[in-house]
Amino acid sequence: MDLELSGKKVLITGSTKGIGLAIARSFAKEGCELVLVARTGALLTEAAASIESTFGTSVTTIAADLSDPHIFHHVAEESGGMDILVNNAGAIPPGNLLGTGIADWKRAWDLKVFGYIGLTQACYPDLASRRGVVVNIIGAAGSHPQPAYIAGSSGNAALMSFTTGFAQEARQDGVRVVGVNPGPVSTERFRMLLQAQAEREFGTSRRWPELMASLPFGRAARPEEIADTVVFLSSARSTYTSGAIVAIDGAMA
Image (cartoon, rainbow, N blue to C red):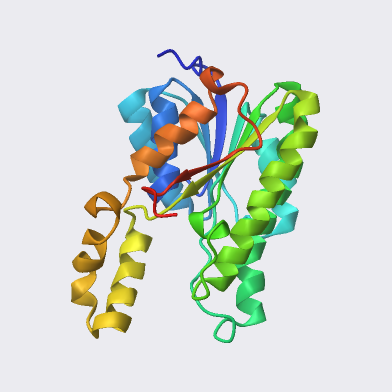
């Protein structure tokens, strides 16, 4: 299937590991030019070198802390424009209401919630000029709130509303806006969370494989399974899809 993505320019945030890096590699396979954004310059350099040597595509890197609202226009300008924006940076920590201070809420939302919104605003003129695509990597807790993940559930729900609401305005400029809600994904962070859950439930972190085995299909999703969906949604094969939130959670919901 020809996705007609060759030569497209893609800006991906949080792109040095996990889902973000897998997304970058999947776009590189399609012949896209990449702009990788993350906080750590050394990790960006490593990711870019690996992608360029494997796929032979052009990779630009921008080291930026997207929790700083003053950085959004800098990133948009440094990128030199893009056809596709993938908002992926940010991981909101677990915790219930009484155990999560307002400073923790603000710090996490500044990066993931306001970071997504602010960068989309800054990049929108370029996206509108190219009839581009915005893909927001959100999270399943947005549609199925968890009391032990209250800041993340609330933040993800806000981003779902932002995605579906803004899509109605963006279509006037030919811009599509879609969201992806991953469930459990086999990343370093997810394993850490499973170990913490095993410690709470069993008194030892070593029993995390039992929790993994209880997931749909006996495993978490691979980052590449999320990435390939993102690439398809961004492609010419999906040009009537906008305002949709695609859940990839093994039917957990």
